[in-house]
Length: 158
Length: 158
Length: 158
Length: 158
Image 1 (cartoon, rainbow over the protein chains, first blue to last red):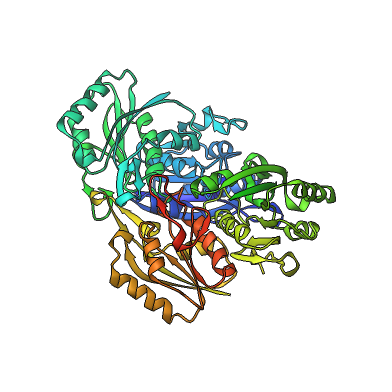
Image 2: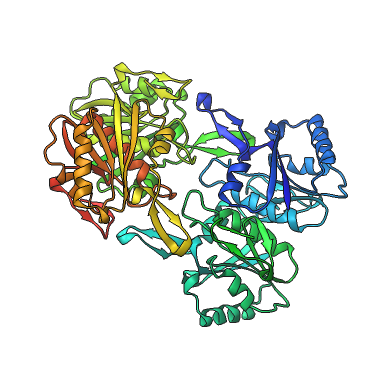
């Protein structure tokens, strides 16, 4: 089994710069998490974009759509900011021959109490079990993009 | 959706006593992990046993089997030591109306680089997607008990 | 031995809100750190201010000065933002009958790779050994406020 | 300023092998801790022994004593198991021209809630402030070897 990961930014990869307390999207944390998880499958990780999901444009979504279309592997996980994850998932349209699972985090992976590691485990199970299609794996649940919204106050998808 | 968790011991819940460098199975870490993961489902956690899985007896497995049989909820995750997880999964025999997912950890959950959080995410996705039956969710994979072994040297199931 | 801690804000206590990626100063982390450190001394922790140190005003510094003057305990640690820690330390003027140690962090305490725990250990040793006066304990060093500057690029005091 | 670190083993560097739940002393964690702490001083780290302190022999202590005598740097920190740290400190006898600070941990450094990072911060401040002599820095305190004992039940020195 092989899983292809695309990191496009979002809270999951945010790091802290004390200079004026700004945040920025840093390197993807996927490789470190998979190493600690001692996973027994092949994987590639591609850093496609490093954007806060509120800054993601129509062109960015076209690019993600094209990259996924061109990707020969049929198991794909995309780490994405939670604010517009649903929009990007919907923008992919119908996907016939692949399983695409979006995940991300409410708290950056570099925090002690982040949800990033759990969410990645959730996505890894989902991508190898589910039938072809596009899904969100977050808040301990598997959602269809048509049937989910983010509850910002609770920091949960529902 | 509701998931019922049974903790029966194993490395995942091991803690450290410096007195003579012994290890012992402590309290279950499931509740803390689900809290950080900000999961959006109902759950119960039952601590059934606190055993190193090498010490698990025939009577222990009978007890687990009975408890699962009596459990009305159909989504069940069992955290279990990795050394005899496969034996316990096989001992459950055929399960008709439930999804049972075993998981655990190679490194105790209280370690910084533990696989426990990822594995629990994996199990939570598996238990809500898979058809009725008994499975192992570990090493980033979903296995049937009939078709898996632990590679102790690599600290992986395969 | 008793140590009095005053938290006035800064990076050490910053938390993350995913809403628009803002940062804010949260509750002090001192109590949790001292618990894990299993310290064998008495202590009180007072949250005096929750400010980014760049926002600290002349009135804030007057308040800190007055609180320290009124404090009967002679061993005092102040957790403070690093950007103006030196200014606040100088603003205390001469302190005759107390040891005042400023510390803080370049990376919030809630991050896995924060310097907060180490810095607090450094300050706790300093406050119980040093003669009366005002000091900074950070970057693995003990500094006099008159003889230190922050190197923002290196994230170190020197 | 330069600090010389000698790691001789103990709980601070213990790692976990799931094979039969044994513990062993692994590589020293000092370098990683000093990197996160962003320290601004020179240092060398020497791994001298990897022993549980209960296994330390008369010959081991002679070796430590000789290495310290031959060491030209006058600021020395020794990470050591807590069970016989006091005995080793006493075995050094009078030290005229150096500051020797022993530290260690009740919980291995690789645990999330370890006291190792705090204790190392404590030792680093102590070694640069204290007059020549031999000390223990642990439990948030600085002790003379003649005037301290380990309270195993409380996991504290007093």
